[in-house]
Picture 1: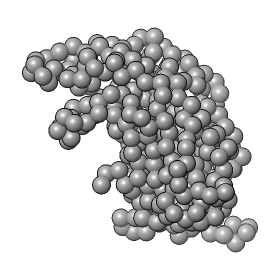
Picture 2 (picture 1 turned 180 degrees about the vertical axis):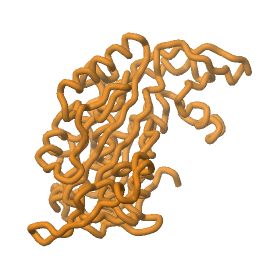
Picture 3 (picture 1 turned 180 degrees about the horizontal axis):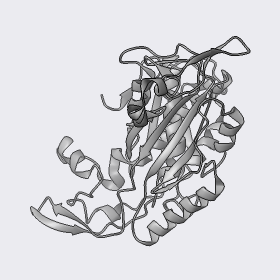
Length: 358
């Protein structure tokens, strides 16, 4: 089934954007893991809508309710189920366009796949609303990884054509940098570039348009030897989860597509013995992965997020019921750019994938 993923850690996601609730079931968590409610809420708040002028006006506090798998603050080892109630919905905005698929959305493909029985309100099961339970699950996995010294952090690398001045240092970024970024609602390495990004988002909103962008993520202190060739490699595992996030259209590890333009002498990461007698590499063009297995260097990847498809500008579509071309004008509340809110979702997906491989 499409809503179930994982081997050691299995997750099953459910719900629709304008239904009663969205939720997730985690199976495979070891018994005795501390369920830090404050930590989970902190991560959920980073993703929640309506917190800044850069996001949708829809207000959801994303308060979760754990129904099973937790007793006296710790995991029981049985399936852990959590639900997040939907509250601030305006379903009437979608009734008049129910027969007109929105460009860039899964309205048409969902209608074909589910023979017209899909819940189209707010995107239904295809909505970014389903990333809320994903962040819940990722928070649990992330906390387990942090207790093992593994740290995940990201920054917004670009919004539209505005780029962050800096990228992560592929060999020597420290955990304090990542932890600081994780506390920022709009994490960037250069604050000046961040302000330019915010201005471009507000400008796009004023024009009735939207913007996409790129998120760069780093995972520190992963030991060498994590991952399995061929189909459970680090890249294939993380990519499957990352591409399950609505609006993600590209993923690259290390130098990614740039490595194709290098010579072998430039692309190869040469080894040396560190002062602590650990095998390290001078460069990290391969993003900390060789043969689908971690090599002990920082794991680095970038995720491309497309512009929010719901825009105020008139767009061409079809009326499926009448069989005629039509002009669509979307109403409702939508993010002019979902990239900042996608950051904790990307990190959650990484945490789930990594814990599943360990």
